[in-house]
Length: 94
Image 1 (cartoon, rainbow, N blue to C red):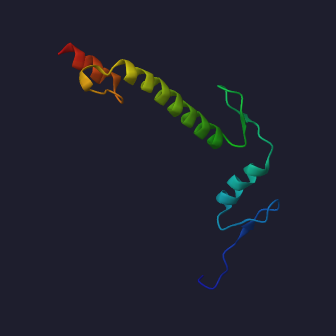
Image 2: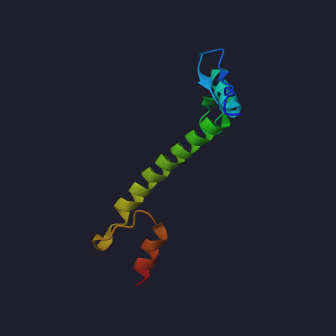
Image 3: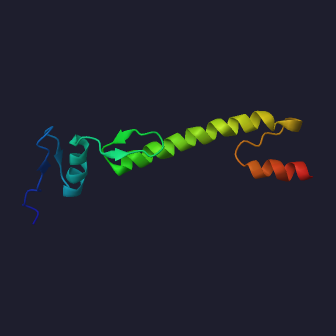
């Protein structure tokens, strides 16, 4: 078995080679026209994985932006409650 050559999968579009078929199969999707739609903004993606990554990134930056607004409003007594809003409410109950 050690003398056998490994099968190599080569992309007919760009010439890139892959040792595993699954990697080659996933790569082929990058050459298709985008068909996966983001239901939030309408952007088009080649794969669901790329779309999901886009949604997570957009959600993170949106959440970060809103948390920064909350941080500015909730900086009483020089304590910042940036990550967990409930910590602010617990703090103000004391």
